[in-house]
Amino acid sequence: MEAWIRARVTLALTLFALLFFVSRSSPPRQFVISNAERRIDLSSHIINVHLTLKVENTGTRPASEVVLTLTPTEVDHLAMVDALAIKGKRKKTTSVRLEVKPTELPDAPPIDAKYFTIYLADPLNSGESTTLEVLYVFMHFLEPFPAEIAQSESQLVFYHDTALILSPYHIKQQTTFIKTPSTKVESFIRVEPTNRVGTEIKYGPYEDCPPYSISPIHVHFENNSPFAVVEELVQEIEISHWGNIQVTEHYTLVHAGARHKGVFSRVDYQSRQFSNGASSFRYLLARLPARVHSVYYRDEIGNISSSHLRTNSLKSELEIEPRYPLFGGWKATFVIGYGLPLQDFLFESSDDKRYLNFTFGCPLIGMVVDKLTIKVVLPEGSTDPSPVVPFPVEHRLEAKYSSLDVIGRTVVVLEKKNFVPMHNSHFQVYYTFNPIFMLAEPLMLASAFFMFFVACVAYIHIDLSIRK
Image (cartoon, rainbow, N blue to C red):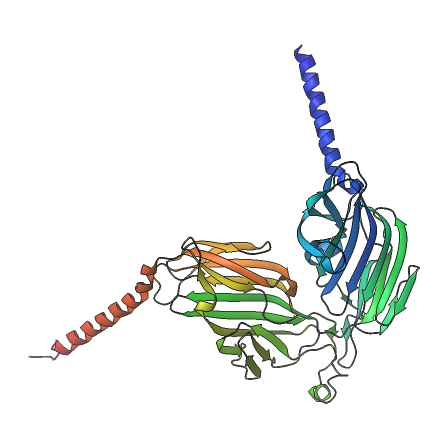
């Protein structure tokens, strides 16, 4: 009897595991993509891929998970992926942002691929369809070829991809458009039908493509846009309840394009700048908050005077010029600092907590950041810090001691890798603060002044003369 019960339990567990596996592996087979359109923008070193999918549920039950497929190389260079569900038609369309997470497919074929799952807001019933818009942003994806160029040469790069969209679903019809910065294209692989007009290469339309279909292509073209990359940015935001926020930004900047070879001629560069050193850059523009004050720009040598600040009631722009133009492989390190009024960025919540509302991002326009670290230095005596960031980041707590501090200041450290301008958004840091701590520094100053006064009085009244 016990053996029979044990056998029935084993069979039940086996059936449950099988049903679980089928339920986990069924979503890719449940959908068919009736139409797919992909637009790849290669205008700069930041690659934007806009993918529009019309997804149909051809299964027998509702489904709410749509799977995306990327190659491991694409995942290594992926900065962000975003998805929207489009509802309505023509001018009455609305979009709903959807959650996207990395996933695994147990029944996927043995190919080298990575998967992401889009979670629909509402399950898609059998026979229904929906339109999804997906945005991929890649960095460090273009390959300079040749890897080294002289000062007078233009920069050529390779872009590698597939003419067919890699997908776990059957695609009835698909088309890919690739936009280049100019008409100077050295070569590209054709997968018929292929058509090139001006700065656009069109692949397709292709009909009835089975799951996991690929057709490798490459495009070799001229791209002289500045490959400006911030290898590391450390931004320190120090809050003072006495009315000021001090921001200090430490930059390590590099030109990530084709490396410069030969000697640098400043005479040729200044006389023929548009044709000589076309891929270099010498000016940077930083967009700072409004009502900024006490702005400085310096490097390891000292203050750099080649900067211009323009301010208005909505924003401030700081145009800076490094000490030398940057060619491929060259680096520059510098510091930007400024002050801000406290009342523009510090607020009080309904539960009597205070919170900082600031921009998570790089002020330099058009920059990608390999590693971005934001340090929020809270006033002494702050407790229970809680950061709220609209995307995943690594965070930890540190302590900082400065002059007149007794117990030190809590520092909230936020780190984000592979940062692109599309990540720029507001974040908040909530904390609890006891106003009694605002008296700590004035009391310490008063005590120090009092002790100094007593010492001076004692010195005046003490007779230090030598008597026989």
